[in-house]
Image 1: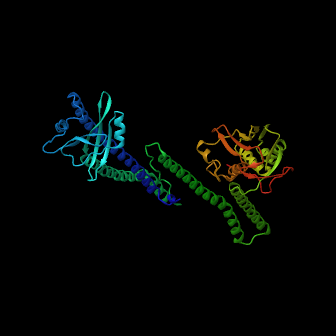
Image 2: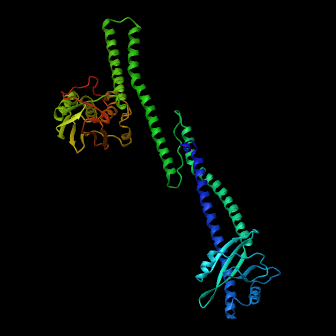
Image 3: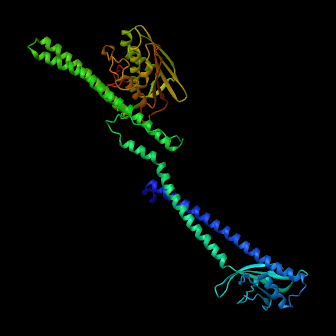
Length: 501
């Protein structure tokens, strides 16, 4: 549309101008009609009063309208005589044949008698008419029938007045309305434009603020919210919330970059140190083998981190194709426990399983098993020696919940918002001896999300934590159609558990 190419400020101003013009035109027409009606009613009332006075005076004198034309002329002169040398109105006595029996002395032309006036006179009713004479004179005329014993006598008293002054008055009113309403429209349009400009000022502020954002920006700019509870306040509030999210995202990105550098720097430093040490002097084959084993071990650690990061990136980018399988929950849990049995035995953890859910579920067992492994290993890591870890399975109408509960030290409240961030660890000392690099929980959340579910955490400091993985029933995960295959549970080759926070 053409309006789509016009700036919104111009559109609003143009629309406001059109509406105000229509309103002012309506007001002008209405005012003019009211003034015109009042003037015409006043003129008609004057004509009626004069005509009735003449008729009543004749009735009082008991004169016949057919006789005494001089009497009628004197009567007209009494009512329409000279005032300072000028006659204000015209009057005549005329019959239905058109014969004039009396008239005022200032009449230069015969006052017209229309069929409409005669028709109404037969009914004993007066008639008001406006005529334009050949000379160009505009007359407002009243034709009042002369009645005797409630019957029309065939004579009409016609009283007319020039509308020159009336038309001049109406022209002056019209001119005044054009001038005042035009000025009012111009002022209204200017005010509307300024009002539109002032109303769109928050949009300009948002545009300026967005233009000033950059990669190296500190994201410390926030827009001041207007006091009015309107759409502009919601816009600026939404913008501030967006800046908060961007600031948080950039801080997480910077922290992620620093964490990746930190995690990869250590094995690289170890490999470089071993290689430099081995090359410093001649060594025995056994010493060279020991150095190479150290290099291979650190290379494996680096490969594990890179593989986890690649899998996390694919999971978060939803570029993993899931294969849906009908899985028996009891067997799935048994296989899951067997896969982490060494870690359970090492810390003498008592794992309790409570299965109150459905017998079978549709899932991708390899990836979902990896997510639950990371949750269980995280629970073991933060449980005391000989502690208890619980896994509870329950089903509702639309989904199944897997709760992993530990009774360890818990998670500090300030760490809860970042617990699923990559490389985040609640122990800021970053001690590798405790195991893990901080990818496990973020990977678990991404894998659960691929199944159309969600991973949440609840924790009280000093009382442990509860991680809840919820997946919906059905064979569609997060909007991705998946293929169904009935087969035994197989672990994904790269789906090794990752120690987390």
